[in-house]
Amino acid sequence: MRALILAGGKGTRLRPLTVYTPKPIVPLLNRPFLLYQIEILARAGIKDIVLSLSYQPDKIEDLLGDGSDYGINLRFVTEPNPLGTSGAYKFATDAIRETTIVLNGDILTNVDISEIMTFHNEKRSEATIVLAPVEDPSAYGLVETKKNGKVLRFLEKPKPDDLAGQSVKTINAGIYVLEPDILDLIPKNENSSFEYDIFPEILKQSMRFNGFILNRNYWRDLGNPESYLKAHLDFLDGKVKGFENSVKANADVATAAVVDECSIIGEGSIVKPNARIIRSVLGPGVHVEEKALIENSVIWSHSRISSFAEIRNSILGRSCHIGKNVIVNDGAVLGDKTSLPDYSRA
Ligand code: GTP
Image (tube, rainbow, N blue to C red; front, side, top):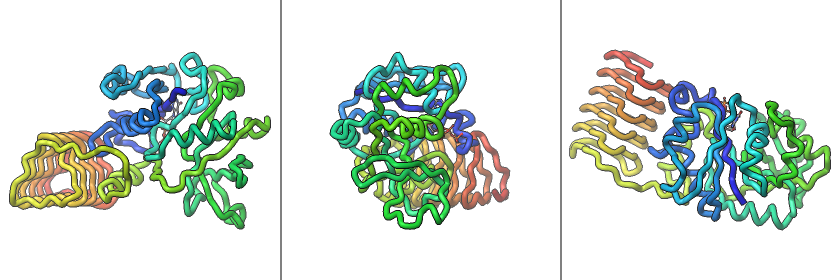
């Protein structure tokens, strides 16, 4: 079995962070996000991984190379124009003429991929879709299955009436196992989507289509800034198990600075006396001046936070300059190189 990671989307919801950094390699706890997916695939013995690219492909290729640093064989297939999720899968045909696990490149999960493969094989599925249980599926597409796993229907943005009587509310988790005959359903060189075009077609043709429900695993879609920040906080709170993130960086933290137990300070960062870092992640080379406060936030590399500045529940891109006494508050997302003069409010 091999894997195809769909990593070619423009990541518009995550702008401005994705203007210069394609979504698959935005840092999560100071590691390119795709490495988390590569880690769970490699753990299940899947070493042949194809990355399906379109938006800023060179940045991703340059960073990951041939995969040998991570013990895998990495190949890249780049569409000249974005072809949508299933269009991209079809475009990669030559690289995936066998059972393939397909992952959206923006989901964080610690599921054991081999359990999904076993489920797929035992059911003799032609297509398996992984499903995540959620409390309120109204903003997503609901996927209804029978007790034995058979997929019954897809409901986009379901209304309360549609949900009445449903004990388990599950949504598409963006992970599929597909047999090569699914490729025959997808038009060549045309834009198409699994959700809107291909899954309904699989149902129409009564192919063997089953849903694997994630029960005790962590799952989150990192597609928007709130969710991206939440994924960091979940890690810091110890809610995401199974990844190795404890690489101790060489940082210069003043003895009179306060850095709580869970925060992560990147390589070469400097934290001056009486600065406070609470439940936050600082990238490499970040400078935090005296008496600045950073709380529940993510700061990308080489940003400078001047004295008495306060940053809460926010995300700062690379090389930002935050002046003295600036307040950056709830939900702010600042693009790379943002410069806020002293005393600004954002
Ligand atoms: P938004 O613009 O914020 O919706 O993000 P997105 O462009 O990433 O779209 P979406 O979140 O729906 O995509 C889900 C996954 O499929 C992501 O990992 C994308 O990188 C990937 N993806 C979406 N469209 C394409 C495409 O046309 N080609 C390829 N290769 N991947 C795609």
